[in-house]
Image 1 (cartoon, helix red, strand yellow):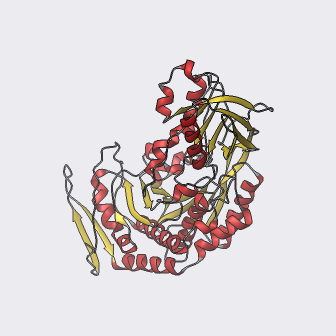
Image 2 (tube, rainbow, N blue to C red):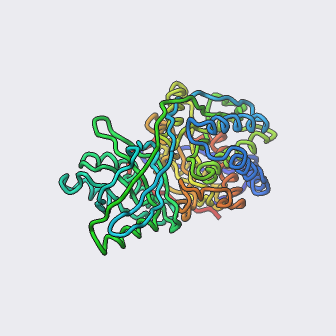
Image 3 (cartoon, rainbow, N blue to C red):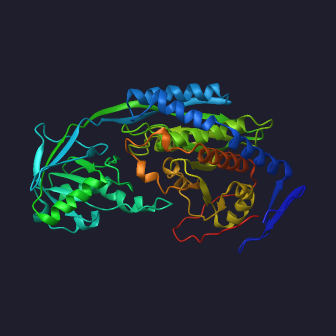
Length: 477
């Protein structure tokens, strides 16, 4: 329950601790968080930003010319928006081009298939390759298979991604995309084609990063659309001896320089302490990168701008980081952690927006367990924006997911992702998938979060680790 007074004083006693943590939510802080919400819900800035990025830059594959154009776009926008500091940090990123990808069932029936190369895949031979397919329900079933059953064939992993608000279905199936080529090659397969990691029924394939392993032969890797995966199953029911032609011309081109682009609102009393809000600037090349992650770029930039425009800045510095090359292995996030290793102890908390533009319904933290109720009390004004106070099991987002290992507290602002994987990594990742009002609600939540964390006096460290942390829900009226 929120109690509004001249000053809101909450004393929380924790088991095993001597004394208490006292949290003062002064009326000006409560008033400012309300103002931030009202301003965000009335501002078109975030939508204007994602429209500009997707129209004027478009797809931003790491290391490409469009990637560098996006860096210049971000610098110019952040400078124009008036942040106290705007700078960039060089990051070496892998360069890969998609080329063409074609597949066709040639026996027992002739059927063209819609496929796309997985990110980082090698090409087939110039003449393509032809082989029978062998179907597996999951990556784990492939791992259990006999080599004699797989050798010389094209592996087809047919793992269906379940739709869920949290996107948890993705976590169950993505291993087939990222690690499937390794297991298939170890069994002697010629190539691997997976059912797309997506929840849609459109005839569009979902790309995404895959990996190879030193000492294991590289094989071509692709994804087919969900309707085409269904078609393969129907053909297999009629005849188990299905032969596929596959052609891919994707290539790797070494490394290039990209950049993490950073903007700051300098804190007024603790400028060396940092509240980080981030998103990733790169995208895959199939769509225009609107939901992944143009929306996130717009959300954290617009949230930072609202704080920049306050008459009085918060105590801590709010740092907006637009990470490079997330899609190809969290490259920008890892580079940031390395470049800032000597100041990570000064990072009060970090969070990343990288799950589209669905409404934020809950905020989870990863802090010291004894501080969770206190930081929930600090965060309680966010409840008025439809955000519940959740668990202590946050990862923070992909590019900041490595920071908890360095002792940095993180938060996850949970978005409604029920349709996110309909469009994720496809040509359908376009501006029309973004609801402007939901985008504004995200901006309000991130602005409130960043401001409240920049003002917080709760000690969040050392963070509690482990997967069995109990959720704590505090409801406010």
